[in-house]
Image (tube, rainbow, N blue to C red; front, side):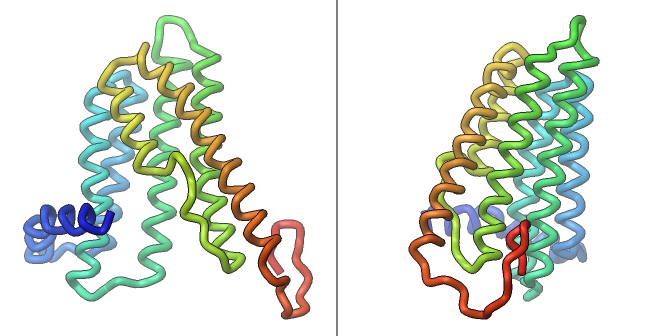
Length: 211
């Protein structure tokens, strides 16, 4: 995995250097990536699925560039990582919203079952991310999961390229895998916390898990 990351960084280094020379900041690249993701969502809503796939690929590239640019410019920060993670969720949600619109209003006949699967896939994707974030908020790690964001994006892009009929099946698979990953992470973190020493700060834990 480390070798793969190093190879990827070497590949994008010229692009990062070019963005640096043009005066781009990591925040600007992050926001541009979000705009591209919104364009992919609009294309999906209009039934232009291959265009949506192409924009997702470009957006994924920008998702890599902002971190590399931050490292080059010495601007790596917790607030940047926080913003980047949240905007990733926004972009992903916009894409699902575009697909939902197409399923209900862009086809000759509405596809309510597909719409339901899109909602389940959205919930599963967000809950997968939330489970990790909540675990880290409680002081433990959670990188486990059979189906994380890169796999989700690859599967969606493949479905968009194959066309709507194949995409409907892929959305069903995506819903099942994301929800399974959520359950996997919940069980993993629950067991991990149960085996760890209890917090000793004396502060009560509220319903949402926050003290």
